[in-house]
Image (cartoon, rainbow, N blue to C red):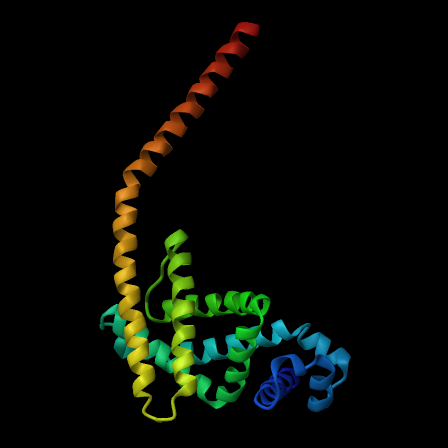
Amino acid sequence: MATAKTRQKILKTFLDLLSQHPYDDVSLPLLAKTADVKLSALRECYSSKRALLEAFAEMIDAAVLDDRDEEMDDQPAHDRLFDVLMTRLDHLAPYKDAVRTLAEAVRRDPALALEFNSIAVRSQRWMLIAAGIDLTGIKGRIVTQGLAMAFGRVVETWLDETDEGLPKTMARLDEELNRGEAWMKRLDSAEKFARPFWEAGKRARSRRSGGEGAEEAAAESAES
């Protein structure tokens, strides 16, 4: 059975290869050879390149969650999320070249972009939780998807920035979060507007269901 050390070595090798080669060129046989492991060990640890990408995202997620600043808990939601996402960029920094390779691959391949999106949405769900923003239901899914797309745009700015202070990246993140907040207000207004109609429809469906049940019961009683 492969050890945690072997898994870590394979993932590190994968990220190193991505920093040097296009995504499509980083094949599983190349990865196994470079990491000096058997293909069977690679299969046991990671069954696909997607599994490796998921492991990378989960590694960054865990680092951000462990590094969460509890002193931010009494700050506005905007500031808490800003801090969490900047922390995420801090943890991505050692892998910036690999992230650049992945970003280029996504721009070329729409199918790959869909795969990346599902991974990004899962990660951003945890970033919201880290910021103390735990949304559920359809609103939660919409907000998480929106945040994944917004963070992707922030990453594009981050990849091009050379200033270690990241002024352009921080400005872009602040802009994206402000835009998201404005959009959330419109979403809340739309939800409040639609709720009476949704509730009326729910009551109508309930009455129809109850009426059908009563008719069935009456029919059964007449037959007996």
